[in-house]
Image 1 (cartoon, rainbow, N blue to C red):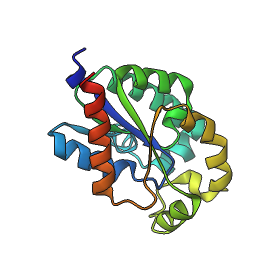
Image 2 (image 1 turned 90 degrees about the vertical axis):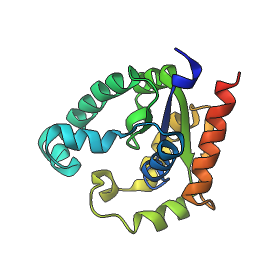
Image 3 (image 1 turned 45 degrees about the vertical axis):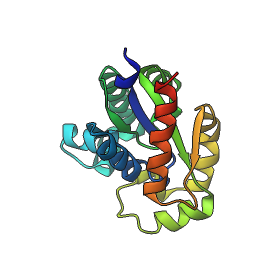
Length: 171
């Protein structure tokens, strides 16, 4: 795979800016943008809360795994994953092999402020999200490229993602 064809995968906990930053990165680079949650909603014809209600989290994660493998086979994509997608070691491995994976982070206080604006589309937000963040921390930490979004605008984060990607393509 040519290095400039490698996917750019943006992951991290909910509220870190994955979708917003991913769209900005795709626009800057003239690449197709895929948001895994939006793609699942489109393919399934129901919202994520409806999928969780009908299929349970295990059913949702199965759909997510299949989509990861499909997207990882693509070239030149910017992919924003759902917050739990790369917690799955198999998904993480597939995405790391497909391109540059960037994990967005933020302080719990910044996440909380951002999640207050939530529209109700995040079923896992109903529980103790701080405990969920801690539970996922090891998986997020396993991703080599980390960008803290706490005190940055989405445009600043997108620029940093592009710079990190360019560093990997010039090696």
